[in-house]
Image (cartoon, rainbow, N blue to C red):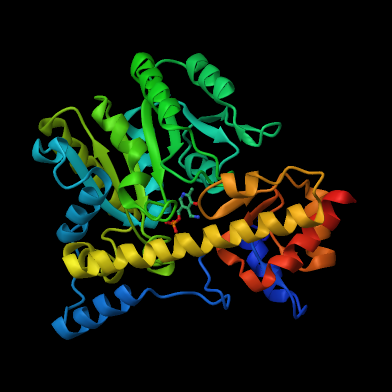
Length: 399
Ligand code: PMP
């Protein structure tokens, strides 16, 4: 019966890692997946995570199921990080949070909720965006369309195009926004532009759905990186937020995240949480314990929390450093071109504007593995590899 199943296309991001593994080139460089590497290009387990794990081991936790909605201390920590612990919406009991299988699982629960309770509502997604957004909403059979976002001419935000498309969207649509460090472009709206987008959402009755995968990782400051979702909440909108601890705590494989909704009142918050639990029950029944305990320990302990902030700033700082070095190396090799975008873009990625053909040259001739949209993960670059990468980029864009 199953012999007719067709081959699925390789994932555009994770397929790059598979190709990297297969390559025997000794100088190969993987700039595909967005995962932090040390200067030695090794994965990093944060010291604070090791400390939390040691504490957990000593406490001798059992392996019982968590409640469907997840670990209470984790949920509290997550909402406090997102809004700030003293936020009035928390005191008013109108914030709900359900632990999820990292950012992806949180987005998926959100998509299922939209499909179930807002039938016929279209989700507007930035062009371009993280490729999995389309899979997530598509697999939930939630209709989606793209809004303009990136302007290749300025290598910046197409704010006029974005607002025109959101204006033209049917009233009451869902607008998917990247909380900070837009993936793949590294281009975010300015505070004034965020204000205008919030106003637009309010006027049109749009529901903002933030994907927050890089809080604290973009600028090294948790509060600065939560500016946009907080602004939207403070302007009186109902807001949905998918959060991930993959990058900021380096818990990629532990699958730690949450879906938050800030609602108009405590009564609707109770009803919404009951429905989110109903959705999660059929997806994974109850979420995994280990990573949630780590996050709760770190956020809940003032000394560990400070240490985490230091380590996060260290990761953000290393990325900023290689950005500077890469820009300088490109300017030295190819001064006729404007390379300022490399340091203007924030977060893990740089969107180089390279065509698929140029990307193929990067991979086939220079053993630089990257996605075909021209995105490179600077989290996977070391200072030692900057010169070789710059050589490859200049060779690829000149030919
Ligand atoms: N959203 C965006 C924009 C991302 O870049 C990522 C990670 N690459 C995620 C969500 C989710 O990742 P995870 O499921 O590991 O939390």
